[in-house]
Image (cartoon, rainbow, N blue to C red; front, top):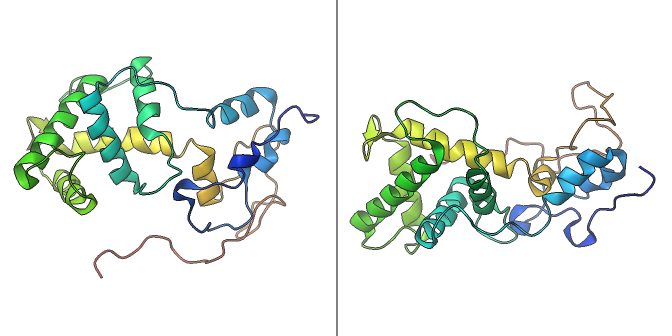
Length: 219
């Protein structure tokens, strides 16, 4: 690449929430000069200021931001701009190319589900979803996840799939999330050669705590 691209110093090694990294010293952007120009441009563009909101209105924006924070446990800055990325996809009609027959198209399904979860919040806690506290929001979201059958005349499992599909696509396409999970970024054109169990490439970093990060929430 000949030094065409440089990682932004202010974002080097950054992870969502800014907590203690699981892979200390790892920064996926340290490999930016080993990617081709098109790949590097796409990845670095994800670190620029998020686009303006164009699809959702202000009330929907408030609910959507709160919901995506809950789904991805984003409590502190810096946050991956999930809401803006989802809004941009819908404004540009960049959907997955399909939708459930029992749901409207994705944009309308988001609008209806945002209104529905706000209604549930007001019924359960006396205020809108964007206003109630973190734990109360979690209870409202969990009730949707556990619903069998219809929820506000929509299949709950399909609504849950819609939310998490868009949220995870946005989150795990961002370099900060790659730093969090130790992902080395695009393989092309650099490639990977150390494919054995626990084998690492020279740019990879050992996990500081080699345990399953999933917590047992039953305890």
